[in-house]
Length: 290
Image 1 (cartoon, helix red, strand yellow):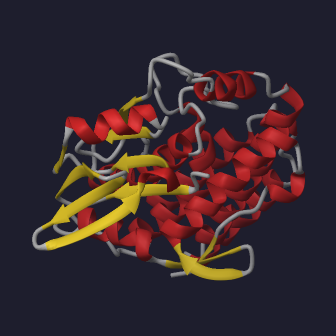
Image 2: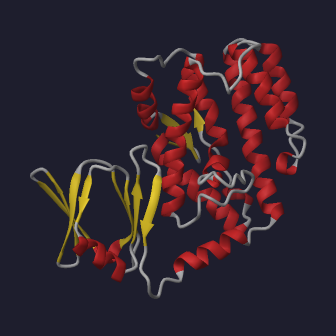
Image 3: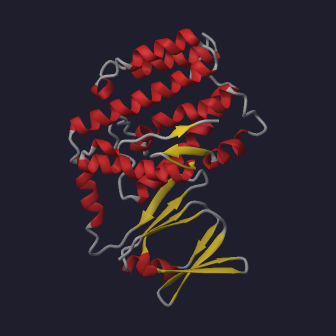
């Protein structure tokens, strides 16, 4: 039975031989039995892949996901015949009831506001921090009172000044946008690996947004990106490298210390499991400290 999700992140050649995926990287060669593979995710554009391997993957219903230069998934290859998996997942996802989605959105926003409160507290912005705690208690199902938007206005203006807006072209927004994109691309890849559609969100419903569900899931992680700007860890010379290294940050998830990249995998799997089952115990959040 297939159980492996294979992630390729660096330059190499992928080939097929005797029912094996063969990975050539310089003089190093690694083989993985195709019968063990569910998904192959190509997370870089610096990969060559043979048509022989693609053909065999199609026969065995192994999904191949391609990413762009920003590491966002841009497409996938699936077989023409006997492919019930995609339809089943789509039907499953669009059948999620509103109460299930509204409860998850409430929890996501509560955790996001809580993490914003911690950032303000760490920056000694106590009045604003206390105000966010008040908003935290007012988040309803589906955040029908929009405490997220109100909290965000208080949060950013307290940190970066009363004239600050997320629409401004300024270094702070350049840093924030790039950091958010790193988290978003990781979540995009994981949602695709687990067979769900990033386009179908629980709250974000933008018709031109290919990553609505990913935007939903990443909300509690935004304050982590913000911390790099607030604490001066990033500047115009290093922000790209620092945010890539952020994925190697030690965090805590489900009472275990692990790297952020690994925690994201468990986090996305658990949230999808909640959406499938309605089991609220599956909703857990990543604790991070710098």
